Amino acid sequence: MSTSQPMVKPFTYLRIPSEDAKPVEELHFNGHTEDELRHTLTRCFRQSLLSEDQKKDMARHLSEKANESAKKHAVKGGHDASTSGNDAEPPVDVERQQAAMIDQFLDEASYEIIPVTMPMRSTQYIGTSLYIDDSGAFKDLPLNPRASKLAQREIRGDAFLLSNHDDPALDEWGRVDCPLQRYEELYANPPKIAYDPSNQAQMTQAAMLRETETKKISLEDYEKAQQAKEDGNRLFAASDLHAAVQAYSMTVDLTDGRRDLLPDEEAATQLRLSALLNRCLCFTRLKKFPEALKDAQAAACLDPKSLKAHYRLVHALCGAQEYEAAAQACVQYSQLGGAEEDVVAMRKAIAAGEAETKKTQKQMFSKMFRS
Image (cartoon, rainbow, N blue to C red; front, side, top):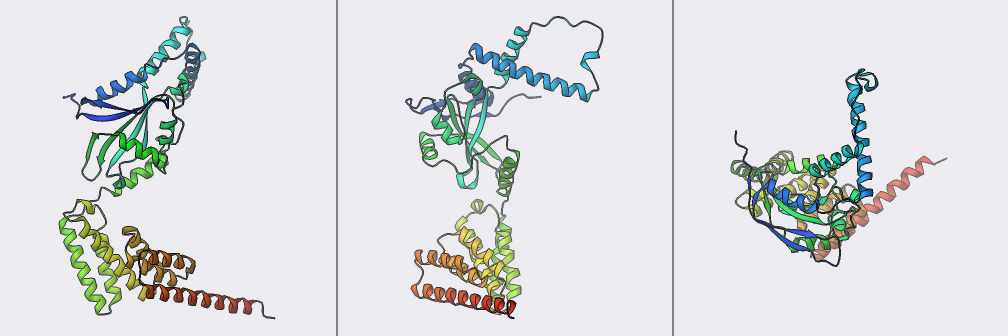
């Protein structure tokens, strides 16, 4: 059985010193195995030794954890340590035992990995993480303000910033360069989400999001989506709105996935956008405003600069009697360069809708309190 590990190609990574006066340093890993990379990072962290007081604190902490674990095992096995036998236990050298526990802990637990950005489509499937000393608190290492800002939590001691490419649809993983520019961009605009590997719910949600990005679109399905769109247009022209909705829905379903892996991503995205907008129009005419609103929002999200998407959004919001949101969408449509006559018509429709709603409410309350 082979024990060989995947080879790691040479790449650049960064060292972020805890002292602000020291610049962020670009380092180069010459490539070999992940074990060698781990050894390289671990060696740096082990240089920060514990003081005597810190050793005592860590020994006390590790002893408590060991005792707690032993009690759990004793309860599970129905074993009472106090009555386990009459043989006298040999004397224990507590200091030597604690020193051994500390050495073992430092050998096994060298660093902690904190995700800064996850490998998602929005990051071109580049994930970037901080590698920090997981004994930093025990060692009372100095606070690292720059690394803390990236992680959005307290980081102590020097930290390393590494990147990897991880595309779930292609089942590819590998180390890639983490240039100084990436650090500068992250420092200037820290991620809105602070990832915590110990937060199981958060990690599960991130994994589920990545799972949606594994869906490939075959060329056969793409051709079916194109045909369904043409069928939808033909049915719409024939005023068969229900059948048109089904045809457009087929296009929407078949283009849900990794359009970036198709030969022409832009054409595939435009096909999906067109199907969403056309289905939205069908729903609006069928007075199914919640469905129309959902499609309009999806279209605007897919192409934030689409005038037609914002136009459909205003009308869907009016149909759903969400006039305040409709007014905001109208402003966005105008700012994007929408035709002035359209904007005027939208504002009139919004004002008329609000007036009608107030009139209806007034009549309803009048009946309720009529003597």
